[in-house]
Image (cartoon, rainbow, N blue to C red; front, side, top):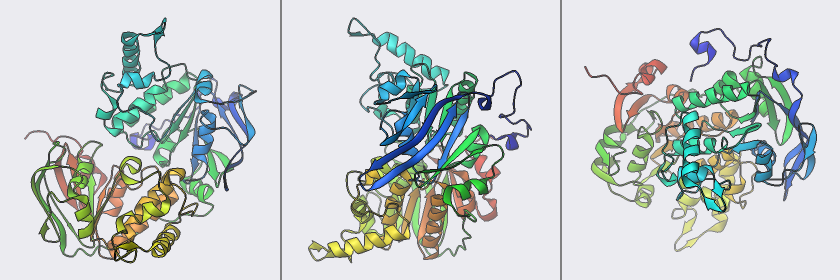
Length: 524
């Protein structure tokens, strides 16, 4: 993705065209007035008032748990306020359902998908709004419309494929496409680029620019500063459920945004790390997985270092981490962990041996959403001291351990018996990360550890990873976020289509060097 600074064009996309009415000149399309939402024992949103204008991208910015998801869920009709009101075109509206919101032209693309895995892309696009005549489904017409929407967005997905055969990035594209099945007045996007490649992100931004020209109002949640600079017009900052300020995206600095978001000045995001590589903990040779996702990979990881694995979405980097942890079938190759051959071992065995893999998809693979925070934190340590005592579990020791880790990672709210599904995305990530501190691990594989988390939490996660490395663990960091690879690792492997394109070390880990290996090498 290119910002203006990177392209050198010198043209600010927010610059005024005197022939076109600007958002600032328009009356609000959507307003919230004193919007409040209470849940048992907690006020998630507290007297929030803001406005959204036609033709603008209004960024909603704040720490995880600040109230962003609560606000957009009410604008989308998925939840209703405890008090306050929502106005659309100047009149009060009661959005009692998603259907009522869509009838006004308000569509939301949430961070968590709402797709039916066994249904086709076309069927998911029109779920609840099927093309029918006289009570009969017009499948051919529906498929053609689905293809038209996908092609218009430049999303290359077969409308006849079932969702369970799509990658996560493709599922994200389907979620985005769902919003375009009817006329739009307001589009709400919640971290829409988290699973997209650079090309797909660039295409989404082109669509957003087209929608702005059509006077569609866009409410956009992101934690990525580059995205704010590239597409934002105004930014509303929430903190602890309250409206802090609304500022201009073109003139507000990153430091000011972080100060507004956190109430404090956050220093260097990336910590200083002194690497002291020791003995080799992981030695992988010519590894291949049964599904072809990993194709002949050889790699090493040593104590006291952070090894980065970079590459585009679908390059095989996540599949490699799963393969090392015993979470996917192998076709051939060897894995030596602390000198012992472990290829084919179960995930349970790898945990016992001292390896932990923290997956990218916290909902599907990482957390038990219908279980408590306590249970999610201690999951990997139930068979070890101090929790395991002979044949029994020591609940007091478990609570003490979980509470200490929740405090250390600043879990908010610190309610250990609260279900994991009721925490914000960033705090769910903390539940999963806390698992790595419940026992001594020799190797921890972090797969996209900062997806969907705010700047303050991101900095805390980076310090956390650096501390584990300093304490002698071997760390493998799998990331699609290039700055993480550049600033946190002492060695980095670049993946492409299941293979390693390059191994870089020290000062050779530069943006140009990494990016040059993201795509297929030309034949000599």
